Length: 165
Image (cartoon, rainbow, N blue to C red; front, side, top):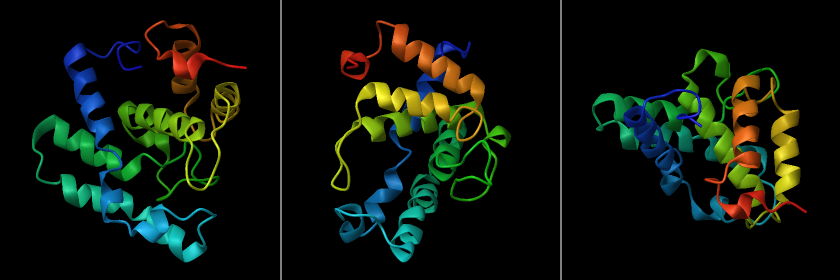
């Protein structure tokens, strides 16, 4: 997505590396929450939300652009374009760097199509429809458009995500 948006290859690699670290804080979330087969209660969800801040603590020793990207992404990857409708910390996604939004959209899509202890995987087409429906609400319209175009039309996208029913 970053390359498609005109980001130079070196910065795109940094975004890729930051994306790989975005959920590192989950290592410090109790397993009874991470592995819970049902919906989290309010208290458990508040604990789960702390994975973003725990990630920042764990990544704080990384210096330079990668450190900044990794900590920003870890902290804000659950924010929404319209924070009155969702998100963890109430920061509008449009105030954040595009790379946070890129990671957010990819994270949501991956979570939707993956099997988790608490849910069955969504068919890829339903996940794509969700991304489209959330454009302007959860995700920026521009990033949703780029994501959808790439995942539906680009042969570099893994086939597992484009095999729609």
